[in-house]
Length: 378
Ligand SMILES: C=C(O[C@H]1C=CC=C(C(=O)O)[C@@H]1O)C(=O)O
Image 1: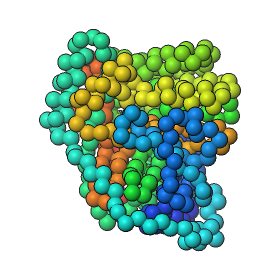
Image 2 (image 1 turned 120 degrees about the horizontal axis):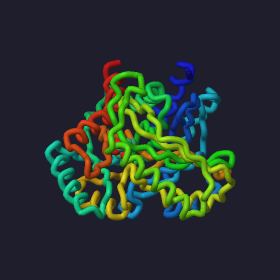
Image 3 (image 1 turned 90 degrees about the horizontal axis):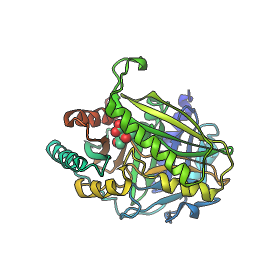
């Protein structure tokens, strides 16, 4: 539990950054009580093409779903750092020395996906799946909530940290570009102390009781999760990784839903270049894109009427020693002055039942919606 006094200080730092156009990232790793804030003093954000360009850098990475798209992969420097373990009043006061001028607002308006559009897009995917050359594609939609003065984003971030201790909770603000906040259950790749880890997370059912052993997985969910697991093993093989530990699949809870998860661990020192290659090969996994990857990507682009932007991209901290913890940007929303645009999706296979897929996206949206509502009421 983080002390209420510390949480208040964290909120006030984030508010200062928002009011003074300082780019920042803040996050809380899963199963941790440690909130980190990194602030970049100026607006000269670094974009990157290849993960290898980030070697020896300390900061935060935010990459879009499709890097060939018009969305940039960003790296945010940590010029000033705060954490829940060293909130120093003097350093907070020192922040007053830094501010940026910005005379325009982000204009990233989103359009909500209608229910009828969602169902016709899903039909189109099901039709393609009949051809057998595609095994799975993820269909996503946007749900919009009004943003207004009654909602304070720093306090929403702090609330999300408290509601979802097992998620990667993060909030990034790039003044004049975009702001995103989310509570992701899915690790893309993590590297720490010469260990590299990833997970295959897919298959979704609503959780009604707290007893996860009551959940009975159907063939559709088992298959769609196995696609992700198999894909990870193929990436390992292509990268000459033949020794790794594999655990699962087992059931995990993520907010109002449960997923099937397999954990992979490589206990070997990999070079930053090798790990960068693996990030590029894994992303986007069949948990957010589909299988085969390029076929699914083409279909998603043809069928979805919105850009995914940073939804289903990846984000997370990067240390100068080459360690990182990158998560898939899920259960997430783009924040603008008037809108909270929630992005939610689900894996479609030949066995998908359209109504169930729709309901699944509704359940996933509750991860953020339930906390947004609680914050608006308080
Ligand atoms: C694409 C999303 O979830 C992925 C992660 C877990 C389970 C999923 C599923 O059951 O479809 C998705 O693959 C999302 O939350 O928008």
